[in-house]
Length: 314
Image (cartoon, rainbow, N blue to C red; front, side, top):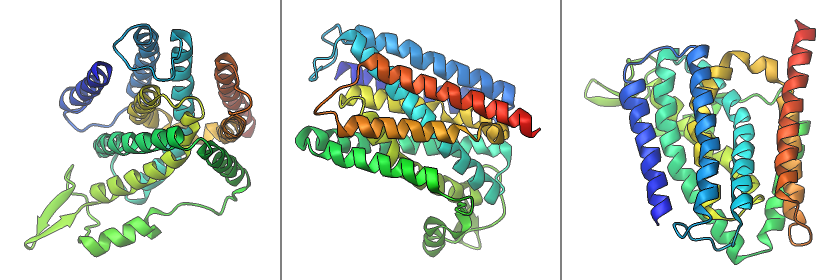
């Protein structure tokens, strides 16, 4: 439990510093600030791959899959990149939610902070459940693989008309049944008192919808990482570190999402690859360097094509 306790303590420290020190006062996060923090989170994650390499050569962590140090580090990086790339779709949805409820930029970080805190708990439960199922029922890998291929095909053939409207969502309609909602912002508060009633503000509504949407995205991303490894420590740490960097990446990319529209095809290719990998995992296992190389190359191609097409359109 030593490695788990230290990792969770590290995450708690990061979150405390984030809200209590660096973002104590609500402010608009500039693209420059977001870019710096995105770089910091990516650097921390890649440095942690070195920690993973060291841990799997010690007795500080249970290693039921008997992974070598190199394989463990490569699996961590591959899982991290998968989660990071799949979170791009999440960023599009978060931008729509904030625009729909007219959340001021200076309060968006607060919503994302609590959203990610909830996501850590929910992802942890989903990862535990996924690892348990895979270890108990080997055939479930075929189900996960088929589901990922279905998701890739759905992304490929979905039309432009399939736009998400938060105010017409199932979540929003049911929140209104449970608690009154005010359409006016009340500073950074999630709840306010009005005429002896506790009323939810747009910040709280946006938070709940973001949480629910994150669970829906996790249904894709967790099986995708489980296609790389069923080692619970690697799955959890790679997933959580990718999530922690989601806020800064959102503020960095929020104003540039249109320029990276072709990245969706990279995500489709990645989902297809990990789906196929899961379907044939009992017959053939791709080398770790191949999986990592495919994901990196696919993302690079997606970025380059997006930038090139964006310049042509301009």
